[in-house]
Each structure stands twice: as structure tokens, then as C-alpha cells.
Length: 167
View: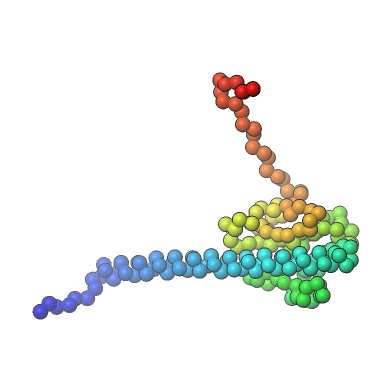
């Protein structure tokens, strides 16, 4: 009759190492999914704000004043928006940017936020700093900061050395 023996110390360490690796992989995957869900909420919030701003413009021939998004959770945009949304993580208002030369009645807008998932294909450096990498804007203005330096274009390709351009 054979005696059963327990796990050796090395076998026990291997099992613990494998479990630790699986837990780390699971946690990082879970974290990515949470970030993507929060980013989806931010995108949906900005889309709702855009629709509300356009409806407001149709009624008032200008966009809402600069401080309208500062009151997170308020009904300041009612009937266009029941409740002004806030960032799902920080509970801070989304960044509402107007051009400096706009009068009291803005004719364009940008609303920006920072997505957690930097691999998101819609995330880009918009030139406003503070990590703001996603936003919406009125159709008459670009989303990127016009004051930010744009990257210079790559040099045009030259013909191969020793060759002449073909006619």
C-alpha cells in the first residue's frame, strides 16, 4: 500500500504564483472594462449636452452662457436637459470652453473631458492641456484649440538618389 504524500514547498509556491498571475490579469482586465464604461458614460453625457445646446441655440439664437455647466446636477438647462451631467468619477463639471472674443451671447462652443482609456480611437490631444482628450463642439468651430501649435507636416518625399523624376 502506497502512502499519500502532501504537496512539496516548491509545488505549493508554483500554485500560488500561477494564482497570483491569474488574479493580476483578471484585475487589469476588469479595470480596463470599468474605464471603458466610464468613458462611454462621458461620451453619452457630452452627446446629451450637445443636443441640449443646439436646442437652446434654436430658441435663443445663441448658446448657453459660460457658467451653465458649473452647476452639476442642477436643472439650469431645463427643459433642454433635465439634469446637467457631471464627470462620473470626479463629480466635477465638464469643461465648457468659449472663444475669448465671444460676447455675452456665444455663437459657438466646445465641451471637453478626459477619457481614462488612452487607447480609445476617439481620444486625441486637443491642445487645451489638463489631459482633455475628447470633446464635442458646435458645427461652426473646430474641436482643437486654435491657439495650440499644430504639428508641422512631414517633408515631401524626394525622388530616389541618382534617378530622375519620370515624365
